[in-house]
Image (cartoon, rainbow, N blue to C red; front, side, top):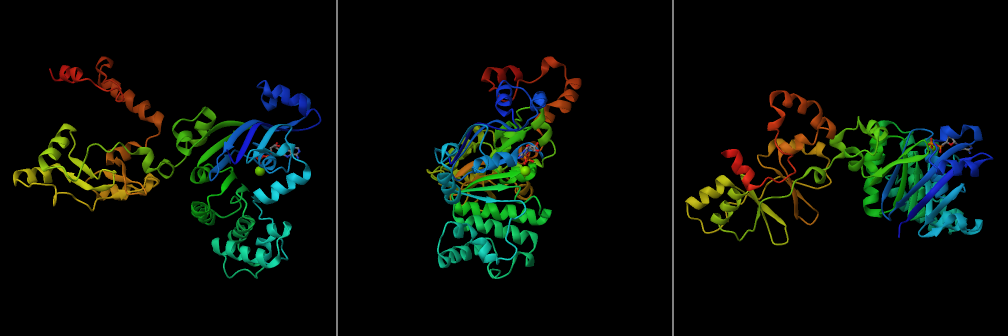
Length: 429
Ligand SMILES: Nc1ncnc2c1ncn2[C@@H]1O[C@H](COP(=O)(O)OP(=O)(O)O)[C@@H](O)[C@H]1O
Ligand SMILES: [Mg+2]
């Protein structure tokens, strides 16, 4: 069951809202219903957020983000459509039950911190539990813990004014963590912070999330922030969903020109990860293989190295063609002493920006290894360089240049179409 589900959600401000929904659901743009004198803030928005996911809603100012998030936590009733939290439709709850859902299941973190100036950091952090009627000692204990999680241990008895902007936002985050709700909604929570502090906060949120596994709906107008934080991103345009997908999907396969233009300037090396550019690890051999078998495998695959993995695919190392050739020549019985075990290993989630150094110093493809030590892919240096080009540009101008040099009839078949042996033969003849 999704933690949050929005289904055909509309919010239209103005007296003639129902009529507006009717026209909008027929596909009209919000600028085409001006005669109704309404503001269509959210139009036919549907999505599901899975438990433990960071779901980012991204859009320019006025695209409907804040209105959407206020409907998710029940602060604003939708004009049409439903909002389910843990499977229960909150648009149908009595105001009393709605209040209960809001205080027990959902916390909000706002852009402008929303701290009480005369309360201490500790009291601010404990606020959510105070509202719920939790005893003072318990809520202070939990708040102390949350404050230490966000790096504010020792600041409990200060008041917000004594803290920097970044620290104040940490108090806001600590308040949400103290409330210990499964769902946290964050509306432009980092947007008012200086860039460097903002990056710190993003890193800290990701770090916290790795252990806490909250369901987070994070709102931002900043694409880089969206790409950095979001497991998936929902791009809003003029109140409607333009696209929902992972950062990579949005980057590599934008749903329309609007999204494509939006992502044009993104630093791809920070968004694409090792797992998105890696290739299948071919060939692999078993540590029990003899040198002759290993050499044959390498030659058959026309590579210069083979990765050595155990039966459960855990990576042992690699053997190079040269080293094996030597082992065969000296009549070695096994691969002991031939396997290089100190090769470069990278995690699937590593941004490719961080791979260049390793790739440059390693004579071999990088081995992509998961948390269990299993080989899941390899990255030859050439692959890394190719990943830098945006998808369209790859063909665009470069291909034109090539066509001038070669007559079109001699164009090679597309790389993803496997060539048959006959085709290969044909060419050598
Ligand atoms: N209470 C309201 N009454 C009338 N119009 C509103 C109200 N709240 C928001 N709007 C309008 O709805 C649109 C979307 O606003 P908002 O959800 O705040 O966008 P964002 O958070 O993406 O900047 C804007 O045109 C805004 O002026
Ligand atoms: Mg807003």
